[in-house]
Image (cartoon, rainbow, N blue to C red):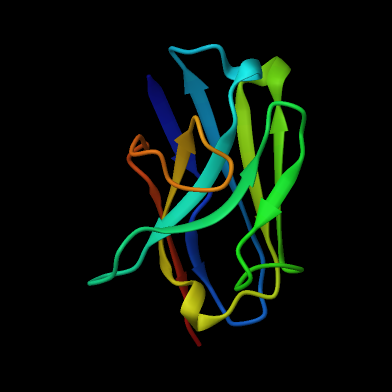
Length: 116
């Protein structure tokens, strides 16, 4: 399994970022996927998930601000993040196999820093 995340960066509060994850090594279209994040000194937090049928789920903390999507033709998972808050600062990871929790497989991650 190979997962390559990109799109992170430094953004002001209220700003937006779009994360992408290109996956290989498994049958992408048949697998549920999630985004998870980890802030310094904290445990991994599930953020959003999408099933193989494109049902989507969000943590309460990001509901209404983040949108998860997938492109099976390109083996790509995306996370559109709007109205970013300082508490969204973390390293974000693409995580396959589960849509409602972290299933212990992730990529190298991309850093998102929200700061004024």
